[in-house]
Length: 427
Image 1: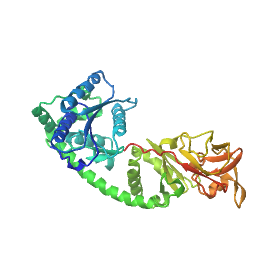
Image 2: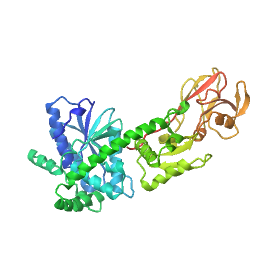
Image 3: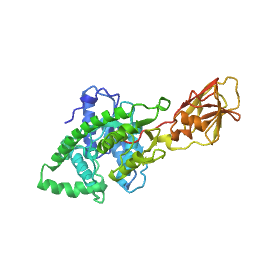
Image 4: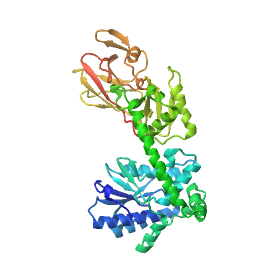
């Protein structure tokens, strides 16, 4: 029913096991394969959302199934954040748990099938999605340190049910699936049956259309990679840990190619904005030269500085304050929310501390005398958003060095800053 050969070299296999029909069939297929072939170690993960009373019995059912098959089961309890869409919030919590449990190079198998693919396409059409959304669910994509794989996308739900009944499998029927107040349930229970009465091949044709759209998206992704290769050139070496693009290179593209390139670039960092929120890109792109515009997205933000746009997320969304004494200058110093620093030189000095800009700082530059730090940072073309979190090394009230800027230090010491994590968002 499925081909597992492409993933035999993975270090581990994991299955998202809800206990429903789809994942039960997939677990059985994987367990059968593992019994008869050399394959990576297989385990199952059950996500317990706690959204309904009936769900409390599901981990026990899943444990029984896994015990019968000789498969290790991990049950993860998650908190679902309240919001406008309970379905989306539950999905976000589920995939966040999957990312955390998946090791480097590991494979997470999920049980979505052809009917799910058709429903996804129709659902996204109704939301006015673009090509990236209409391409629906890919057969494989990156997830955390590994990959998510959907090996059942070519199978219909009826095929899965026929297999389950022939094998004598038991599965959970989620009572919430009958609640048509949820958009997907309404499509599955009310819309798709009517469409299939009139067009019996509707699900198959929707899934095929999604595949065609996926091929078109692949070509646009190739174009985006070419455009981004040009826009990625010229990044300042001192801030190589930050993702940035040359604004002039993006402006040289047509508006459609700008959006295509940014959608590809952002899709690996954040949930993409819907159509109306793309006005934020226009505001960022077209702001006055001396402005400091910000485009806030679901998992981070884009800023403009020194002719480039910069992606900030994770610790970069925090603002470090205060100062820290450096008790042992020979050891690295952790800066809360701002990475860490280490010191080379300054032998024999005690009472060192690290602080941040307050305004009015002056540095004694070898061969140049005393200079205002603000002017020196302008000369070095330091992006404006970096200046408030740039570590400064002091001995008493004397400024000795500015992190990562070799020209801004006393002759006998260098301050090396390991920038904070620019955590990648959901993809």
